[in-house]
Image 1 (cartoon, rainbow, N blue to C red):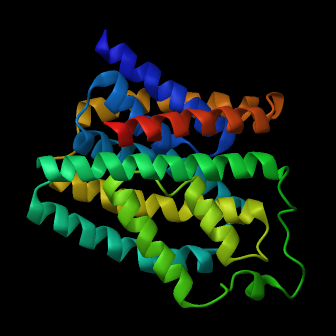
Image 2: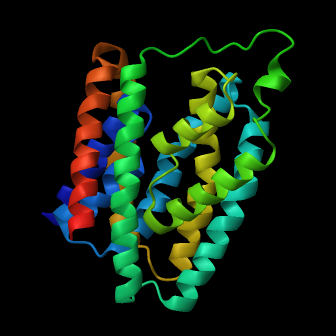
Length: 263
């Protein structure tokens, strides 16, 4: 019975990811903790690899379409991946299963979900995305941040947040990119966010696996449900108002975040 429940949970999260492009890590980790009673360290580690595999297909599709700005991906990865490795080293030294680390993960996850809820609601209220194209001759300028150090700094923050909570590379990442690259159209920002999330979640997830923080049988069941869910969600995307889905998702994430902090 538990097996079917994991598959259904994966399908539900995959459906939301297909509809909105975000919500994988933000939804799966609290679902595993609240509904299945999974320990925070196992929920985070398993969800990191879940996110890596679910976003990999979307990243390849976007790369083939030519909408990924690889300079932006490189800028963020230069800050986020080293930060993820440092965080994993600290978790290994302190002990991922210790009560202190579990409490830190739970509280940080709650704060990350509240941030994601605010970012998701902002995007829902902001309206339709801008055109994908960048004005001729402005490609390099659009992929240049306000200051060279900012992507490294924010990338490091997101890398640490993702490694501790599995949340932060979605709606929070999109909001950060909008601030750092104001000339870059929103569809390209979303594409860059999805592309850089793949190596980040993969590195962090494999690091958690080396610490024993991944439940492999559970991961397989979640993926068995999520992959068809993403396919169905992406095909129904145009039939359901995205603003409504994002608004409901932001309320759900805010509730989960507040509940985690109150634990």
